[in-house]
Image (cartoon, rainbow over all chains, first blue to last red; front, side, top):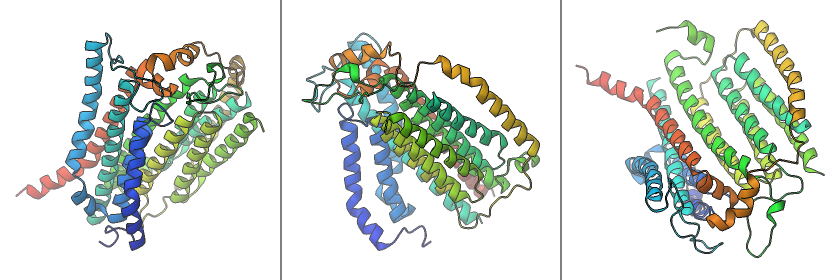
Length: 149
Length: 114
Length: 183
């Protein structure tokens, strides 16, 4: 019981402050995917690691109250559909599947390059939520296996 | 060419691990080693001497002739992500097998059939 | 020092690290060694002018180490020692792999030398990428505009792998609930 309740007080206090900064960093890397190295995949993994940090520091039961796991499932599944929707909209407006139909804007701006930024956000959400759900399910399974013994 | 051969050796170490080892965890580790070796080999094919990374920076003119080959890097990005999905699935299978047979040894898992 | 010398040193270090990861009896040391090999791959990507790949490789490798440690390391795990190594299989495999290595040396001689790629398609991507897609990162332009269909395939594979993992993990809970509900 004590092991699943999390780590020491120092770890909990530092996590309370730093998890928001890690989430902000992940969102920054996703949004600047077309200007600096990173993109959707790296930013998504950083978001998943931020949630994993909270789960390791506060225990598995805390996550059940803090995050709605069903909502994470829904975001994960609907991101896959949104990728396809961007593609079909590209076919409607641009002429071919996944065409870049949003106007490009000027180079080096934050909001530029059309569907590249939209696809980065979609991929970041999908990878982040999906990977965290895998680790959460493995932790759940780990606890059940110990209780069985 | 020495670099290519060393990377191929890393791939052969991974293949040796998958064929010879009996512990499920070693097999998962060997598949990870093979994944690293293949990704590194593809990126090695695309390096250009004296080049710089393929990102345009504001107010710093970089000629596209001095940039590294971006196509192998884009393909390897896909490959790294898929490697993680494969490893996660192998780990889930290994955990379920351990829970049923109480061992990680693949020869013992073959013997018990029910 | 030129890049090639650094890469030779790094690759030798990774080969030694991976042999250690396969031969160590302790499981935690093996997982840590494979983590070090992944870190070496990330540094090699940095030396090969691929910062995008270095970031992605480092983060995904940390994640797979976390998954492996979380699943396999528990307090009452006793080391599974195999009674004997199958010497015939190990010997035949070693001889075959050494033969494959020596047979592949003329194959690697046919490739262009290290540091002089052919770049037939990439020349078009580098020269016209920024103007046509409007993005400064050419790798993002390649994976999300020129080859976005491959990224759709990759997203599907990741989605399927995650769904498969969840299905494998959750079968036990449903069967346990079904056993409890039986009268």
